[in-house]
Image 1 (cartoon, helix red, strand yellow):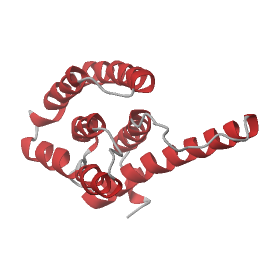
Image 2 (tube, helix red, strand yellow; image 1 turned 180 degrees about the horizontal axis):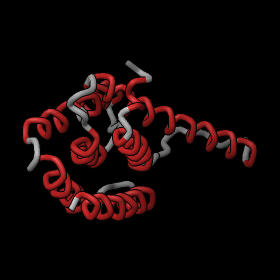
Image 3 (cartoon, rainbow, N blue to C red; image 1 turned 135 degrees about the vertical axis):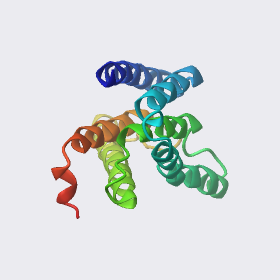
Image 4 (spheres, rainbow, N blue to C red; image 1 turned 180 degrees about the vertical axis):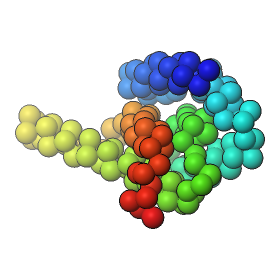
Length: 166
């Protein structure tokens, strides 16, 4: 049953990446579908771990969404990305490993991969057209969330990965 859920999840995540890259939003019905998959994958087995995962993994982006958006007077991250992390966190939470280490690695992969992408994009555009800048440009954030999720999900299957950090 878990394999079917994971296959459905990855097909749905490909759809999320396609929609977010092209339209810059994630539809609610897709987030709800991923949340239903997470409930079947995790919440029916361990409900407490499910609620711990969805509340702690989403907290850093909720703080960024609230405080940084108020400080800059514009939306810095879409709430669809936060809902996506809420749904995906139930798949990658490991109760036997330090929770803050898991969250740190998850967000480290997200922000490093996004920064590398922006750097390559900036260098490419700068070499192509010298007066291109990053101001008022939007970036689809879900591909980086999905990359981080995939890396964490694969390495969570192999518990020796976490021994390196402990």
